[in-house]
Image (cartoon, rainbow, N blue to C red; front, side, top):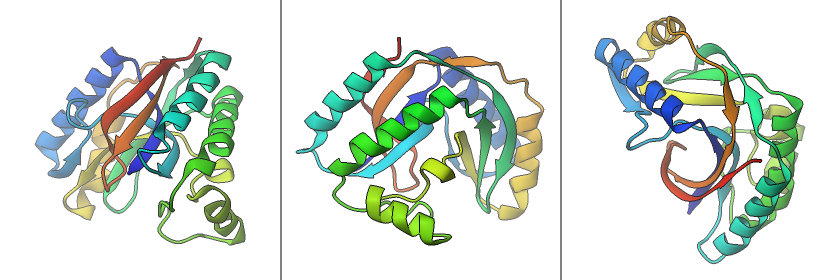
Length: 198
């Protein structure tokens, strides 16, 4: 099973994100929309290919980490896109990176395979990350963001970014630390266990 240990925004903010994505989708055709109903806005901390047999141990470890960390103030920065996806980035305060780092090093031993993020390692360091942690977009390559959707036509990505950047995005406290299950596009569709930072 493909898991992701994530930060979920507060529920009211998640609903706002979902509504805004659907509004973008009325002007730009989307193949995937993070609507806060079927797919949940999130900040990924660690993608993990694992199994149901290992899940109880993962739950215990994440519970311990949640009990030791305080909620983290975050701000949205700017929207950006790849070929098909568009996202909005957040700040990366030291507290968030420390939590990410501890999750990577404590949870990754429970992997059963690799997650191809990115599809190909960029360099020897990322090759090392795949070998050690089962995924490449961690530690030095950890860039906190919320994926908002995928466009049907790559030419529409700039327009999607413009629409996202027109909104005012509020600061929020990252408090919901959640073990989730994700789709093949790495989007959260199921909440397995939720914890709250202090």
